[in-house]
Image (cartoon, rainbow, N blue to C red):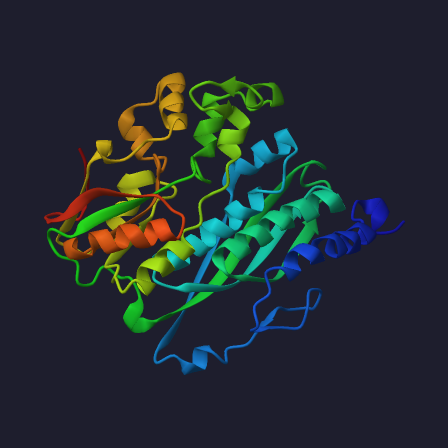
Length: 341
């Protein structure tokens, strides 16, 4: 008896590492020390030493049950972008710059080409956020997971000057709320999505006129990464006073998280374009509007608060980064929370 006969193929692991090296190499920053395959990832802090009061920020997350769609469609080269996005967007939301990322893939069986495809997506997410992919782990779980199943999670570390962190401090009544368009459902709410639609290859390959593409293409669209948009705003000299990454819990849970006590967010639902996938889901699943806004991003992946005089400059900076901005509401005084009108 040996390890391979028990379900763990060490040689397949070696093959996976070789296949993913070309993707990982593209994400390297000058601060990365050593190469892939060591016992730990090393990242120089020499540049951070030049900061006045550096604060390390971290984020960890996964893609939830969205990985089921990737498995059904046998398309694994974008789900890694989702894993990176969920972590680095949280860091950027606090005013930080992502530095490096590590992934963790748990699988029933290591298929090297599939693992390399997953890591290809992770590397693409790192490129989009200027983070280095400095390590990771692929773990085979025979007997615990079906052979074709896998799960993906990640961990990111970033840095910010304490004085430049986005904390909600300085927020005032009348400040403008600007939303950045999402790429679709992103990586939250898929347990409900999978109740609305049959998650079969036939169903996911169905073309919908209102979507302009197949259901699977729409749902599997990777989560938008907003790191460069927030950096562009900062470089334009605008101070972002508060920021909310619209993830699980939608508007009702996430928007209040960016508000200090005594402030309320008012968002106008008709101030931006809602992607048709949300309208389709609400209709097909008979989901009440409040539940939709309490579960999904409804077309806005990030919402920021800025001074009214900075609105035009902020909008231009977001567009310059390749994102689509909307003025969606304002800040008022009142109980901490959000009103959708």
